[in-house]
Length: 65
Image (cartoon, rainbow, N blue to C red):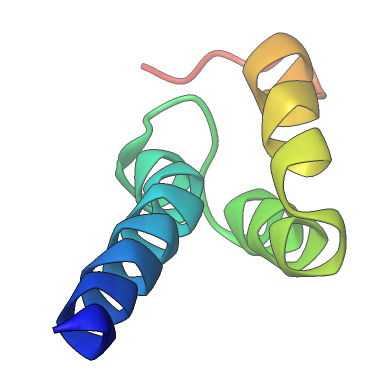
């Protein structure tokens, strides 16, 4: 029984950890190589990079129409 609890707990932690990746992948704020750079940053420093993404993306001021 404890193994099921641990499995569910780790699954929830994994899903919560993956949420920022999916938010970046689905976002229209960046595209192409810039999105790839943000994903690589997420792999490197995880949630801190996602917080930076929310406040800084897109880095350059281009029209994303």
